[in-house]
Image (cartoon, rainbow, N blue to C red; front, side, top):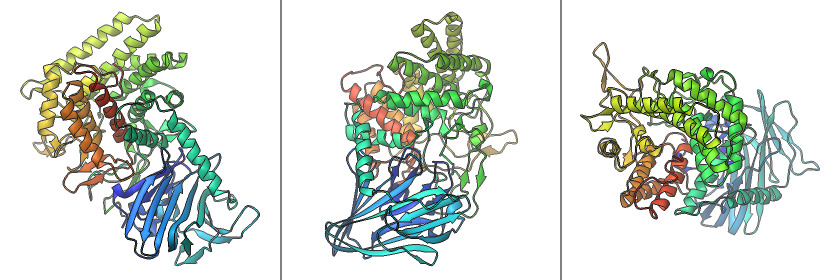
Length: 618
C-alpha cells in the first residue's frame, strides 16, 4: 500500500518532480516532464507498479524530516537502535536529462541500509530489461533499465543486484560516511548515463535555491510558511516554457474509493494566474514575464479557440483516458491521464487572465504591445459570449448553467480592460467598455442574488450556495461591507463550513431535472473533502471585513494541516483528518501566501479593501 497522501514530500528540478514518503520511498516520478509517463507509480497502485525505497533494514524508532533551509533539498533522518542515518534527496538543476540524487549519510553509530527499486515504465505497466553498467572513467557502475521509449540508469559505489525483478543493494553506513545513488532518466535509444559528482550537485542545488529564495520581498507574518509555499509554487513551474502546473500528480482522489480522480499535471489558465499573482507580490517578476510569454504562445489564434488548460509547453490535445492496470490510490478508480475539461467552456478564465495582465501592468509598469493586443482580443470575445452558460470554475460534468462566479469574472475581464486602457492611455472607446462593465454588474446583482437566501447563489435562479461567491469582494465586484457580501459570507459559513473548513458546494443530489429525478450539480456521484483554497478565501473575506481575530483563527487551523515539511494537498477530509486530492496543490499554496499577506496587512489597517486581497490588485 502507498503511504498517506500527507506523508509525501516533494523534490524537483522545475521540469518534473518526485514524491518521497516518510519511509524513504519514492512512489511517484514522471520523466522527463510533469505530464510524462511515470516510471515509479506505486502511489496509484502498489509495489508492482514501481517504487524506490532507501531505508534502514531494521526497525527504526523515529523519523524526522525537513527541507534544508529555503531549498527543495529534502533530508530524512532515521534513528535506529544502532545509530542514526540521514537520507538526502534532491533533483539537480538540469541542462539535459532529469536525475534523482539520494545520499545516505551516517550521523552516529552504524546502520545497516537497504536500497530496493522496482522500475516500471508506462505508469507501472512495463517491466524493463535491465543490464549491468560497468564502472568507467566517470565513476562507479550500476544498472540500466530500458522499456519502450524510456530508460533509467542507476549508479552507486555499492553493488546493485537483481532480485525478483527488483534492483537491490544492502550496505552499512557508519558515522561520517556517505553513500550516494544517482538515477538518471533517458530515452531508450541513448546510452546509459554517466556519473557526475553528487556532492558538487548538492552544493549547486542548495546554492541555486537559496539565491532564488533570497529574492523574496515578502516581509509579513508567517514568513517561513509563505517561503515554503513560494518554493513549492516555483517547483510546479515548467521552467523551459514558463507554464505552471496545477499539481504534479494525477488521480489522487477527492474521496477515498470515489471516482472524482483527475489529472492535474497541466497548466490551467486560472490556476496559473493565481500563482503568478502570488509570485509577483513576492517579487518574482521573471516568472511573471515567462508566464506571459507562455500564454501568448499557447493561446495564439482565434480567441474563440482559447482553452482553459494546456500542456506545459502549450499542447492543446489532452485527451482523457483511463489506466485499468492501476488499482488507484486506496482503490479509488478510475486512474485518469489527460483531462477532458480542456474542451469545456469556462467563462471565468477570461477574467483571471485579464486580471493577471492588469496585475502585471501595476507591478511592472508596462505591458508588451502583443500582450495588449491579446488582452484586446480576449475582452472583445467576452463581449460576445458573456451571456452564455458555461461549465464554471469547478468544471462540472453536468449541464451548463449561468454560474454567478463566471459572470462576475466576465465583469472582471471588462473592468480590468477599462483600467488597462486608462493606465496606458490607449486609443480605445473607454466609455463603451465602462458601459458593458456596468451592464454585467447590474445583471449579476439582479439575477445572482437570492433575496430569500440572503446571498449570492451558485447560478441564476438557484437557492444553492457556492464558495466561489467568496471571490466577489476579493475581486472588487462589491465592497466587503456591502450587506449582500456580508450575507453571502455568513450563509457560506453557516451552510458550507464543516469543522471550520469550507466545502466548495454541496455535492448531494439537490436539483430536480425535467424527468423529476434528483441530480447532482456537477453530474458526478456525491462526496468530496473540504476545499482548502475556499477556506483561505473565507480568511480573506473576514480580514477585509475587519474581523481579523476570526480570520486568524481559521488561518492558523489551516496552517496546522500542513504536513511535516509544510505541504498542502487540494482537499481535507474533516471526518478522517486526512489529505485528499492531488498533492501538492498550487491553489492551496497560493491561498496560504495571499491570506498571510492579508492578515499581515489587516494588522495595520483596521477595515476596508486590502491591497493584496486574494492575489488581485483591485
